Image 1 (cartoon, rainbow, N blue to C red):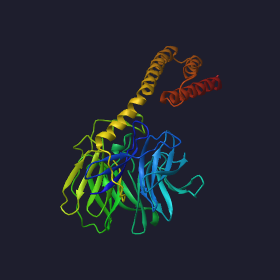
Image 2 (image 1 turned 90 degrees about the vertical axis):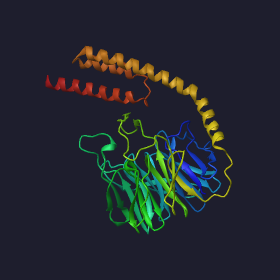
Image 3 (image 1 turned 120 degrees about the vertical axis):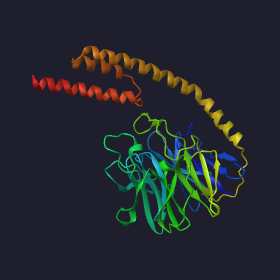
Image 4 (image 1 turned 90 degrees about the horizontal axis):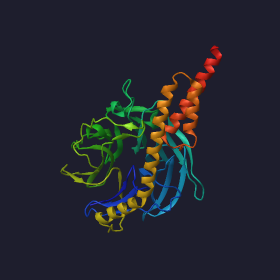
Length: 382
């Protein structure tokens, strides 16, 4: 059986974003991220190198590229604030490429020894298409994306015409009609993509005679070795990160499990085995035994969560107080009707001292600008 590197896209408590996992003993060891200069909110991207691996770590704003050795020890980190919601890393012509899903851009990173990394835009599209996965196959570079949402729809669940493009050949579309493509991987001489909403592995290029069994759950990360294919499964998302609101109750077509974990597919028999864990992984050529039992790994995580509980409780109380204040102000705004000066004063009072990271604070700023614009229009009309 294999050792896997696992990345956890939303880590709670902070810092529990990477782990080593043994598929036979099911032992799991957290990779220490304590030396990073900023809190790590998650990880979505692992790329093996000659000396170890790169990982894309999520910050509260931007991405932190981390370089690890073969013993999973952190060697160096670099902050890339322009890369938002990083999803995938590959090495292309000697340099790391990272997908920034938040801006629909692919970045090339130059990171000389002893210096800070510098990112430049390698490829971009003006449209919002949810780029997410990079893969190199047969000397070419491929990129997956969800495609456009249906007219009038806000949720990505309406984007049903996902595409794979060959960036190294003028962005040629080589596959379409994939319902949420993710996690492209190379299975021997075949390039494959996951069809996340349908629980399917889709051959894209190369020898495409192989057929893969249907899988349960929202699949979104894959890797393989000589004996097995490993496919990650995410728990259905209850809250939209991009829209800031609750998701609808609709589930992926292939969803038959609400848990996170790994499907292990035996190459010879095509039989599947469920490993109860979380998404995204890479086959890890490590030889150091993983001795930490699952129970001990969970105890470590729960202990760290307990240490965060006081801060989380205080934040929750503060947010509840701010929401109450906002509701009261909304009632005041309704009462003043079209008196934009009074409305502006209420919003000014409300936003003074507000947490700039609190979503409603951004809304208040926008509303205050609208009131100022309305007052200016009234003066012009008069």
